[in-house]
Length: 393
Image 1 (tube, rainbow, N blue to C red):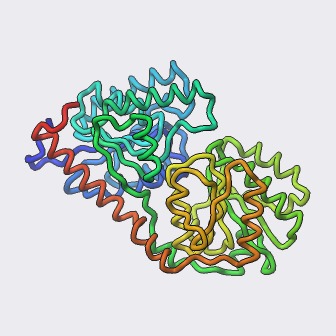
Image 2: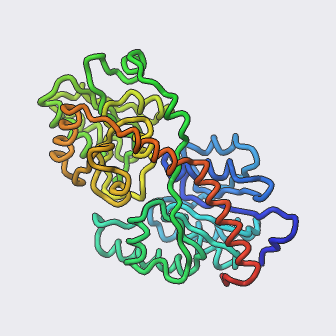
Image 3: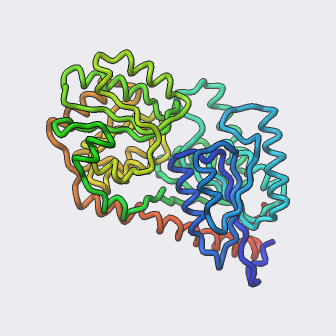
């Protein structure tokens, strides 16, 4: 049991599959960097090879450990080794609280924590590892693994209500408690960034006469970047004053560029790779597009709303909670480039704007400082419950 009433800080260990440049990873890093050090002793375990690895090493008071076999792909032998590595690391660290993120680390990390009788086990669903586009057998396997991990979990955090509802439908929550904590964003940089013709021309390659349509995403199956390219081809065949910009990198980068080469006007498309100046990019876009096949609740959509950029996003999961028709954008059907193209053309023709009242609401609901505060409150609440015997790992 946690000796919560002693002067010792609670030892919290976050576990995540890989520190790539994505919303779940950036929010996890913000959390471990900003948890109150008078209350919490903070550690982080990750698979190696992420873009943010070096950034963690520069953080103060965050102990980073790597599990060399922890990766996104299903690899039974490596996964068994990763489970053993996680168990050994957790045994060494002796955490009071284990908080897992992402699908692979969420399953293996919770199983390892449960085997060691860690007093408090928490998992955040930034999105599910299963989805309707999967092979049915793979889908059932993922759901079964998640269900088993949830049996060993004390609390689940959801970033979207739709994911929470879906988890209930699939009997994932069972006896553990659950709460909604939005995936927060840093507000001030979004409000301070300004539109600049020189930035658009020099950094983005967009002339003063052109409209800038952008997508910011990891280039992987979930984000379906090829649909963005196909929509760009349809739009630029009829409108020469539009530039499509893709920010991000990943496994599908080569596939994306092969699709770009097939466009009638490939020069109207630019792949600019990973960028860290997202507030400045958003301030200089006319429309943001997100073609995901499934989501938790992507941070870039509230970021765009706060920055005043209308969004055309796929009609999936958490996107439906944050896109308000006529106020900050619209929804298009996934894997339907014609629908995306039509909505993009409509946004340009009608010169869509973001409702300033909604923008202020988003600032309040998605403030990243509130995200950390809610997690701190949750840790203390669950730790107290563990002391009085409310939870039995």
